[in-house]
Image (cartoon, rainbow, N blue to C red):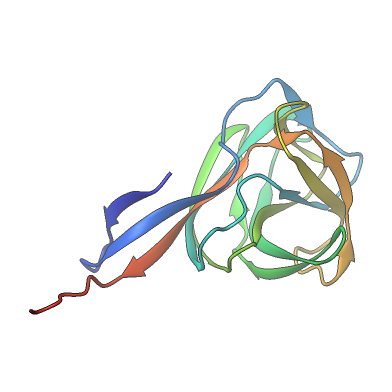
Amino acid sequence: MLQAQELRKGKMALTVEIGAAIIDRGSQFLQTLLDYVVIEQSSPATVAGTIYKAGVYMSSVGNPPSVLRFGTFYKTNGNSFTYRDYSDLVSASVGYNEYDVNLDVQIGDYIGIWLNNNNGLELDTSGGIGYWYVESSVITIVAQACIYTANYIVSIGGEIGVAFIPQVIII
């Protein structure tokens, strides 16, 4: 959904959602991997810009959440992905987490997250498009083959801000 918003510098911008709604869901994603990247397929970027807010809903299964990073990713081939940009490490807790970020995003990119310490994420096992994941000690994956899970939806999302300057036409 698009909505007009005033930026801090007084310019107008459009806000476009990327990823899935950040909500408590019926199931939890938990791999027996210590560190991994999860990429949500819902709502890829429809505009180029900057993701300025990102969020995730952490579940209570697995180890208590500690730190994570958000990232943007693009497909390189089939189910292989390369990162475009990533956030600083942020602290996480069980439940809803939202952060101010500054991530470059291009049309067609997906939002994802890097987790450590066997943390769990909220997900639904139906009603989604799907997600990819891969074991990785870093978020900076390059042409990395990922495992795809169809129909699931993971609570990872964000908002893209696209600045524009209104044009005045003098007749």
